Image 1: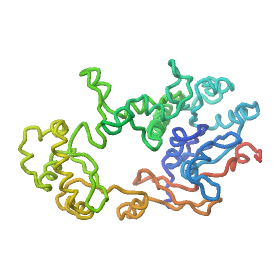
Image 2 (image 1 turned 45 degrees about the horizontal axis):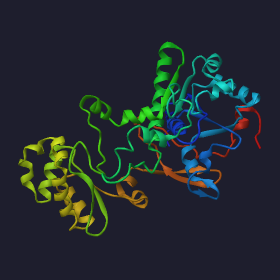
Image 3 (image 1 turned 90 degrees about the horizontal axis):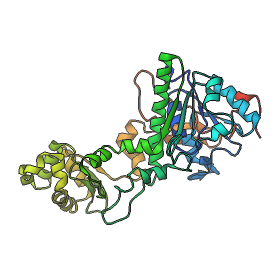
Length: 383
């Protein structure tokens, strides 16, 4: 472990959010040195009951709660609210995802928080944002995935809209919330005051989907469901090999597309006028898909991957989780780390999401017990 202080050392972030988007943002900040105080209700964050468990301990929590200190406070009670304000006075940022109006109802709205700490950056993460006709609706990332257009454009052409099988909307919003906190802190360094960052899961996801709104406004074109294919280039799909295993192929760059069609025995396609642009190839995806599919279908996966790599064309095997853990590239870069834990001894989990050369982050502990650090911050021991 490096002796260099991580880049966010000295910053204190209160994570008063639950489930995924807000806690993911706080985890990212904690990975790079921020002190993260996880404020939980007496029952704990509901995410502690999600996913697979070992010895009745959620492994998802162990990953999502890493580097955090758990403090139990009932914000609905005056004593809990007062303790919370004491934490706010020493904090740099607060992340919360209560339904709009909830903090205000508890007497902890933005004005109260700013009075307690004018330099506080408050990130408010909700499905639809703090205002507008849907603001007070209950909502989760799934609703954002549905209403952003993502589900409508996902899935097979003759099938129903498809939702992602993991909290994609929350993850995207969490990344944006972490960025919003850092931008707010940078602005505070300039002007001396904090501010509120209103992060709507639906809006962050819509922005991530690219130009679909612009295309519709200008051209009246809606994205169609095309399965694993791409609207921007071809070939791009998953293909079944002779041994029943799968590979993914992508040809976003013209040079890669040329290498692929030559490899699969269709070099004449390069001379087609439409082949020179990504949109032209996408419009002829059936021709390109058929060529690639028929070639791959007669070969085992290892043979396919070897041939593509020799041709310097882009291919990847479709991995399951055990394949990920055993892949030599991931192992060489230390994809996973063994983290000490008071409940389970150690927990193996994904390491830092990116590596900084001069000021690396670090993972010091896995998600703590409910209220494990309450006494450290309030002087009270929670049962």
